[in-house]
Image (cartoon, rainbow, N blue to C red; front, side, top):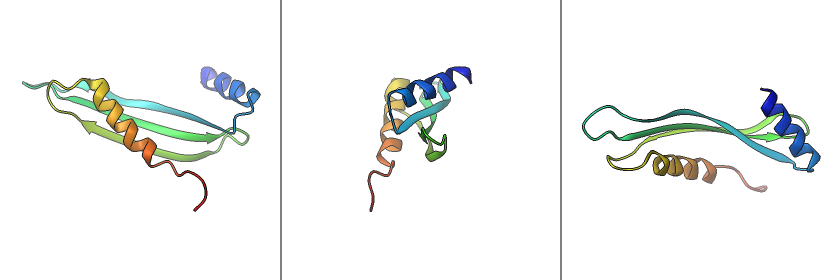
Amino acid sequence: MARYQKALSWARQQDATYGVTGSVNEWRYKAGLDGEPAVGVTLRVVELNTGNVVWTATGARAGWGREAVSMTAQKVLDDLIDDIPAGQD
């Protein structure tokens, strides 16, 4: 957690308003003939002045055989990022 706190401190010094953090919950190829990639990711947007999490989402996906796990992860991240609210409605 010390690394996370250092990153938050650095971002505040840069006058950033928000930070993005997250975790990888799953990153593997499934056992079996095709060995499909499987990815699970959680993203959080943090308001740096307060430390409050203002948005969070978790996504997971299994890809097709022969697809790289990184490509599957990119699809998950694209879907999650598309759901971040931007601006005021």
